[in-house]
Image (cartoon, rainbow, N blue to C red; front, side, top):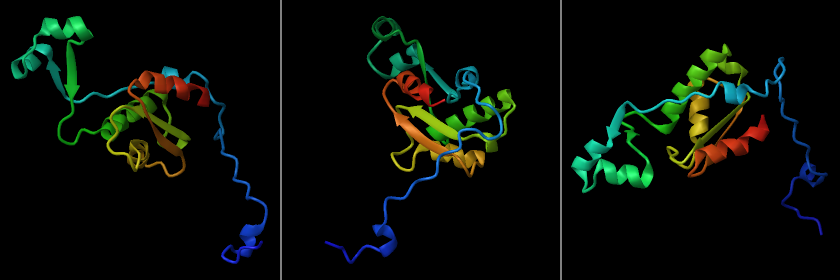
Length: 153
């Protein structure tokens, strides 16, 4: 049975998508992702003593159960995307690579700015990259997310 609501060109065999370009004129360095990892932290650091003044706990109680002695709290204007953009700029500067040479942005986070659009696309826009794939990997343990992304190199 022929469907009348389908355009005649769409009745042909499925279209082949173009193959992605994996290299832009230079060989892929398999150690790049590990050699040039950078991070950015919020400005405000909160230690356990400060936290203990706000809630009924102590530094000793927190350290014994979690091993955590301090944490960073994002302030106004500090988002996952803004911190990731700062880290990306530092990594690109260290590597001596222009943002336009980036083919792929994988942002692994447990705290995205929102579900859609992805934080990675905000980083892509902030870096001024027009032609690259960008997506988030959401996981509680972002180290595991990055291990999953390693085979994509």
